[in-house]
Image (cartoon, rainbow, N blue to C red; front, top):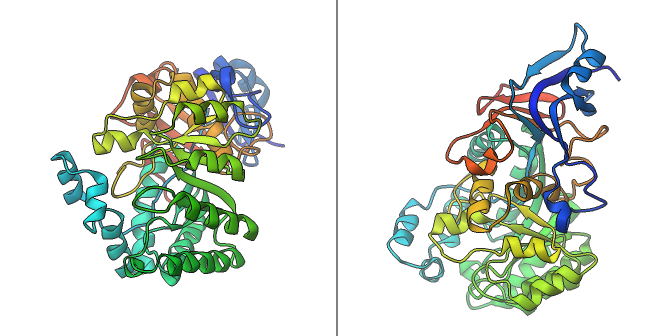
Length: 427
């Protein structure tokens, strides 16, 4: 296959080769497969060759191919963001200000704010308004290096509204230059009109899940298992029903309490268990012993944004052999950032991941958390060419530096889609 894009003169190319099969665990969680002074050859949307820059240039350079000079920067796989709530209307800046003044997230939710305030605004918004807003935040994410993204519904909490959100997510997948994976999260919190009829709402979620599956609108089914959302037994019921419909499973688990959701995810064969700030030692050890452990998707920007002191035990999860992924949890309430580089920087500081572990978590393992592990997440010949060029002298800067965008060039599916943090017009 002819080469149509060359990346040369990198100080480091992080290949993330030979981490599988499956998600990286234990010592492999921090293995970057570094090629120093490297280059990458791309053709037909795929990685064709990775190696020393002078060899790649000599063997693949021809008059028709585009050349990107990495100028001594770092080249690595594109970031995969495996947990976002990107489709919503409005904002919650007022509630964030209250949070900074000491009002708890759950107290705001009990008062009818939080998720429910976004539900009110999102229900009132048209699909076109929601699409426009989501494209704006997706453009920021892509400019920061995201080349695959999971997006959840969950901000309408009624049948037609949730289907509207899933249809917007499907449209995003058609207009964005990156891969979009959809998750149905009707079980986000109880819809306000069902406060006196929990059984009725559970049945609504199940009916809507069936329609979503019949229309091919979502690959994953997610539940927020927490005191102010859904109980452990309600979560078990919904997840079991969804699995019977053919959904793959995810859980919001152990975010504000030790609910038992992580163990439930293990029992039901969930792809991922997300959050884990209140994961107990016994469950952590049980996860580490499991042959087919769900990925632990950690969301460090949440505690940062909400000003919380409790963090998921990233270093201990890795030490126990649990595969760890990172995500932004981009949403208007608890994590208002689309930036994977910022997520990596926070994870190194608060969850005690090494920079290498955080990079694997944001690329290779994150790809497995959304079912893309066989296709993206590393720079192996044959993989889809999702590649970043970062204006940093070595990979440690991806954790060491923070508060600015280190990504200078984003390649998705073999095509340059962003430069200098800005999404390029579609060809």
